[in-house]
Length: 181
Length: 130
Length: 128
Image (cartoon, rainbow over all chains, first blue to last red; front, top):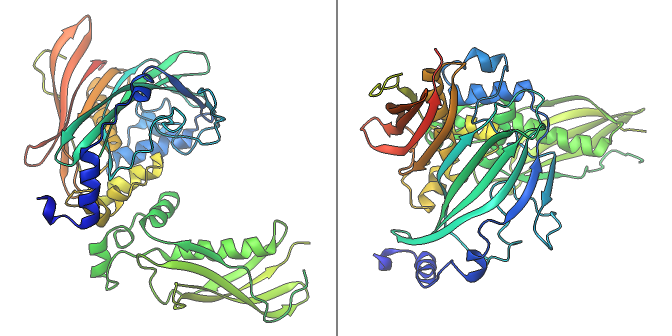
């Protein structure tokens, strides 16, 4: 079926098939803490809007319309953090990586992908989030693996987010899986 | 700044498509099928999805605001939506001074696409900041 | 909750309206979720929703069973098939174990024809 692809895509696929993503620098990065991001204080309207969006077109539960607490899946970093700090040596943090980790700052190769997909999430929850809470997110490198798929060699990655509130209590720990090809 | 009839304002330009239209829908709660879905836009006779007039309204305000400065005022603006902002267009907001009456400046304003076809012609009155 | 209980399903017909509303709150304006053409460039037949939206729907699904005073302790999900625009998505699950008041749930989302889009598990404490 390769002959039926447009030339640029065929060349791209052939290039991908000869690579491995898992160089030493990638393997050795597992466990590295990469960034610390702090949210703005959580606002009641943000909780309401989130709940309205995820329950649409049905009404959202009253606890969220009253902003008694935030839905567990709420993201106080969605529209940008209050501060971002890189934890990687030699990285001044001027490139803010909002989702995932700064692979360039880790020294990973400059891969080129046709697509990036959400592979899944695994999350363990601690205390709830409330209006006024300030959340800190520390991101670290999880496992990187690869496998051949129908779209060529796929890179499957994990990034780990650990959230705590202003009292240092664990809010949640999430492992995010990404698939790129 | 000394203003005279015929002066052209610095322009405000954006490449437009779903990325802008949907962000605008997000803040204005304007999730309308003709602005999100090619099939709906086609059914409306525009060949595909197209941007909301309110976004061009916002772009015209951005252009005027930049020219009048932080202490200036946009006194009034009126616009008609003549041609749709379809996918793949680069939209530029433009203006030209048509009258100066004391500190009130009248302008013709409009948005146009990359080939100069006017999308939304109109007029505005502003005061420059001191 | 008891072992074997099937939780009340959570159903949403999904299309650009849902995807874009979620994009709005999560600042997640992905071309393949907004535009059929962009999705086809990535090898999909049409625009598809973000995994994060299914993640939220699964939370909404659990929440309606555990009640406002219940707790979702843990959720693990893998995305197996895309949520194509126009699909009716149904979140389902059942209680497979209970240990010291904590219920283990097997859960998934499926489309109207029964194809599973996302699969996973959760641990919850119900409080009716």
